[in-house]
Amino acid sequence: MSHEGIRIVPADRAAEETARDAARGYGGDLPKLSISAVTPLKVRVKKSEGTGVEIDWHDGHHSAWTFPWLRDACPCATCHEEREHSGRLPGEPMPKDPNPLALYHPPAKPLEVLPIGKYAIKFKWSDGHEGGIYSWDFLRRVCRCEECAASHTGQEVQE
Ligand SMILES: [Zn+2]
Ligand SMILES: [Zn+2]
Image (cartoon, rainbow, N blue to C red; front, side, top):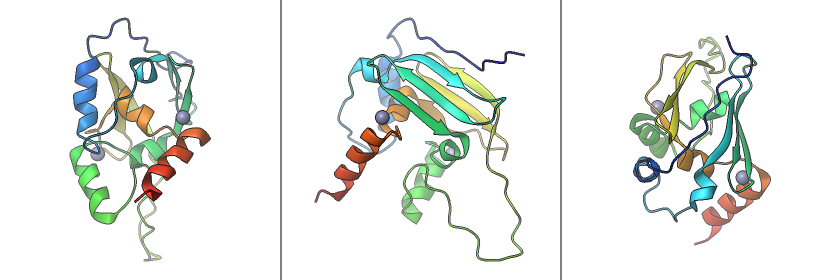
């Protein structure tokens, strides 16, 4: 067992188009990101610590997400549609069940993390879900750092 988690270092850009196709499923016509913005230098999946995923990007940017956030941002068609219907953004948790007797759902964590080619990773979540393919492009677009969060908000506010 590795104590450092999974490291994925892409060596070529062959999958770049595939990654863009995968990202198109999310949000429609998005502005193109530069290749260095969607190329991870280092991917740290802190599975044994249970904390989340960190990526150092080729353009010097750094992103980090917690596992429950990533679970709620699942880019698969089912979760994407479900979010559209309920008006949630990727990563936004489902509203709490008002029923005090509702079952407690522990925060999601990955049982397995699998690289998909050189352009994405996928998780087998503790709740049994595993449909989402998290492309680098998708992950960069949902970066949660202050700088990106500010620009995401800016886009939503503008009419
Ligand atoms: Zn999903
Ligand atoms: Zn960022």
